[in-house]
Length: 358
Image 1 (cartoon, rainbow, N blue to C red):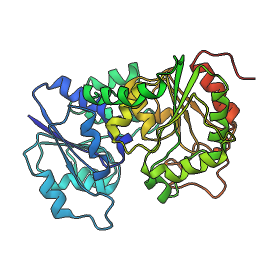
Image 2: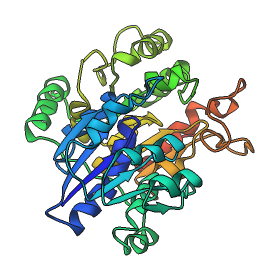
Image 3: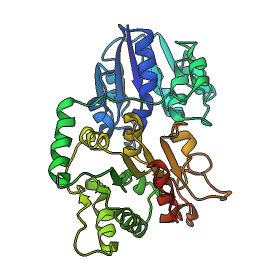
């Protein structure tokens, strides 16, 4: 038995799909499961052993290469084809397959023409649950599982990668014992910026938050980032008021690391502070405590209901959340980004069971 998931999107989307893949594997242990995803997200293979094969296809191309996609889909005969996209293009993709069961979200006439089984798209829930509902024609009992709780994703890290993270961290913090290791990742994906999807928090706010956290000498504050975050990190550095680096501040943002290595570093944390981004989903999948800044997106759809994961967002705004429900890009006056450092600090203190900030 073979199954193929087609899941465009970033690494966060791949992590959110994992509970569905795991449910299918549990139901059919001998099932060989493949994935087609975008090149930027094929690194999900570093984080899970659920897939037999991961193939890349650039769904962002202006002209969809039908012949190439058809060739990928028909590499092997599949019993199940599961499409996570909800667009008409996604439904059309099923036409290219000769799978016995072609499952996707219902989108009217195209769904009836190209899919053998359709599932009602319910976006008013955690995205991992939404993806898992695609299995309901294959595993009817999946709906009962979803009703019971949110399906939190899980990832597996290579022991060698975990050891690498220890070797990176231990020499830097060996001088003393730190009660709390607080990792900060301020970056957002480059693609979201290009598409005018504003989810980032102002560098001056990050700088103020870092300074507040460093006032407690029991905190080790560790800054993370990637090559796409260089400008943001540079702006944060400009806004920091100290000249001599405090002994409990460690900047690892210059490391050129893979997604798996980023996960290994996060696994060593007592808390990750970030925005709605891939590192947030990594922390969730590792079961690490999390405080995440949210602007126009909806935390109820992107975080499971668990006290370990706290979202911080502007209150009493009738216009938020708006992204992906009523808007495809950010507005010209994104007041939802106006969250104060004090709000974030309060959430961090609650997560770490510290005295509430005054």
